[in-house]
Amino acid sequence: MNSTTTIPTPAATRPDPEREQLRRDAATIGLIGLAHGTSHFHHLLLPPLFPAFIRDFGLSYSELGLLVTVFFVISGVGQALSGFLVDRVGARPVLFGALISFLLASLAGSLAQGYGGLMLAAALAGLGNAPFHPADFTILNRRVSPQRLGHAFSVHGISGNLGWALAPVFLIGLSGAFDSWRAAYLGSALVAVVVLAVLWLRRADLDDRASPAVSAAAGAAPARTAGAAGTVATAQEHPMAFLKLPSVWLCFSFFFWTTAALSAVQSFASPALNRMYGLPESLTAFVVTGYMLCGAVGMVIGGFLVARVERLERTIAAAMALAGLLLMLAGTGWLPGLAAAAAVALAGFGTGLAGPSRDMLIKRAAPPGATGRVYGTVYSGLDTGFALAAPVFGLLLDHHLDGAIFFGAAAAMVLGIVSASVVGRGLARR
Image (cartoon, rainbow, N blue to C red; front, side):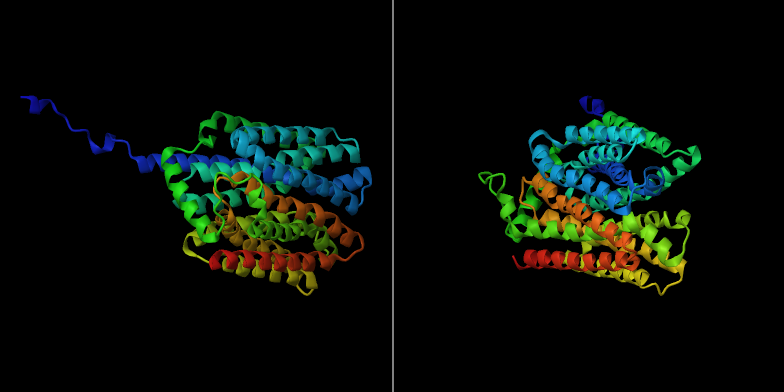
């Protein structure tokens, strides 16, 4: 009979939409994490080799700090502008262009014959760094399921810290192995080529035209969040209307202060610890690596806290207060040398713990449809903080005010806590 010809489809062979969405989410999160780690790796294209530049080119710490300023001025201006570019042409092509710029920066570094060559490398690296946050967060917000966004932000932050942690080890290691810092830059060029190839082969997972399932879920949730925060934007609003929102500029100031602190640790903690405690540079050079690895651990925990804590600014305040206290302890000169180095490294745990809450706070403050523009503007505070802080902290070191490196970083963190608290209270009140 006809009934005998009907064969039910086994459940195991039927497509599982949730599993397929999980696979897509994981692929996108992993690829964006790889790209973000590469951008942070190139943040530190120059600082780990500052001693070599002092030796070979006779540069001062103030001059080296200016290299960091050039990187972040270009990155900051470019980041604010690239947010509009991402919203207009899409995030994926902009991301590929950024990686090509990193490749060119590494090649320029390998060929540098003096300060001008290093300036060129810093400028190209800054240009490459500019689009990453608006591009990354646009892709994550459009492709990743809302229930996994907290973990996506966590992985994004962790990968950045791992990029920062890897850079000193990679560059100093290759420089020592080949007895040439130029060889280290050829190695960093190869890193950019490999990452670009991987992202190109998996470019379908970076398409920021969201799948229908994610679009439907993500389209409803942000609208409610934005409405609660009093930041709903209509389709008729001017593209620059988001700049009138106080929350955007408070988030900008939060990034400014926290990255001013990070600039002190990344570029100058090593020589400051060397002078204050007599620790060898072969050890203090890797304090930044320890700081970033501790930050990665903090971000793993912070990714879980995002889904469980409503008042995100309280998590940020507690975590960054812990980091500031540890940095002040190192700056007193009271600790044994190894304990001071450990305190600086452990401070990274506090900043890492705050990271996912910070990114979610910005998402809640952003109007719908302005993701690239808001993240570009807000994250340009990161570049501005680095750009202005680097020469200031370099000047302190030139005047042998070594402890001020750590006290200044702690003070900047306190000001960051104030900014985050005002944003959080404003969102809760509305």
